[in-house]
Length: 344
Length: 286
Image: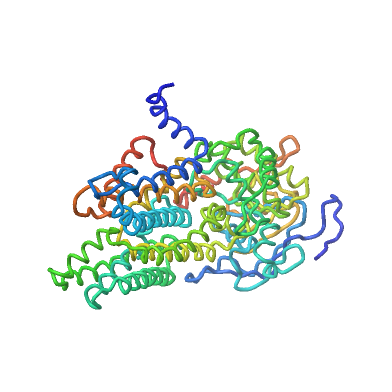
């Protein structure tokens, strides 16, 4: 076999390992993507930094270690968290169209960030703290409201309450935008709302590591239980679960991790909706495999999008835009290839 | 445990599940769904809760399951008060086959049936090989042998109901509650399900099922509880409960019971029910 033939066979081998052992395949893919991403960027020349150059250029080494690496790892955590959270929310709300933007979490975080930029004069740490705080407030408000509603099942009530709370927070964000100084504060706010990881440092990464890994570990430990929580409440109850209490625990873990990453990245949509669908396609619906697959796939997708975000133009393309763009394209492709099963 | 007088039929005498003085209303609505209801379910037999639509059968079943709590009255399961059990203990004792289980994700039969092992596992644990063996055995017992990798959405309605039953079998409960188990099944699948339920009872599982189909109750049940308006009208062995007078009182229309080949068959007498319907001007269902 010639070298060219061998290279031509690589994608085929990749596809076949994805079919037979999806988790191993995705793990390998994530490692490769992470390693190659270190070489992608706009220094010293646009797009790609060849390893021999990196070996010689001290400046390039510094740049890779102190700028690219934290950003790549943060993108990875971001994608992993959003995808995990999406998978989990879809399962506990028993609805394949749910994503973390629901329940007032994203809009709450946006409002918190806007408030800190415009009213409190945002230092990064303050902004992240406020975003996390308001994300949790958004969730709390949605849940409290849902408890007060007197009709419909728990899930319907929670989703309706989430929509109402989100609307309230976006009105708040709108007001803050209107009040913002158009020269200084408004661009910062708009860029945050578009989502992105520019200027992410090791400090940001370390701020994320604890809440994200705690959240992900809890979710991964409960991965089989998630299947049970996706059944009817009566059935779950008959199988010895306490569906309400266990859903709440899972929800808190998912939202804590999500609000932490959203505070750093701004609003990045579509990963939480799309990646769980792709993961289930690869592994089947059982969350024992679908959840880890979604986590790996989310990491890959976010790192690739962020590579483009920082490389495509001399400036920065907001990650949220790219994630939405490629997410929507992929979603359309999936809808056309086989129908996505949505019942009820 | 309460005991009963010896029965000539040699049926088991002890009540494994008993309710006394149950009253229940859903919060927010003033209507009492169950009113001072008492009930004894004999162990190892099939008990049918028979009554018209809206008589509170499903609510009663959910109370017996424990997912609803009565405002008044108590429920005893295997000799202890229901609320004295932990969630997992109760899960090992009482299983449920709901009327129409909505499963939003495309699990395979095996993945779904494995969930029946949940009461035996720690919430953070995943099922092991022993659990898989039990689940495969349940799939086989439900008559779905060799189909365990099929996806639930690709099954027919009958196969799906059998998969739900297999999930309940994997749970190995002492008491199995079934809500309108044959509601969506054609005759062939009804037959298959009924045979399975009989086998279960023969093997010692107590089965409690709700139905509005008097023929089903007549064909399957050892004991029948007639329910109307949230109370028990009468309860006893099927032979004495399935008779024209009692069924007429329960359903509010004249009902005849005939013997065909030694079996009781429940009929609406020709024309009469239709005449009543015509007079009232209200369509009569079921």
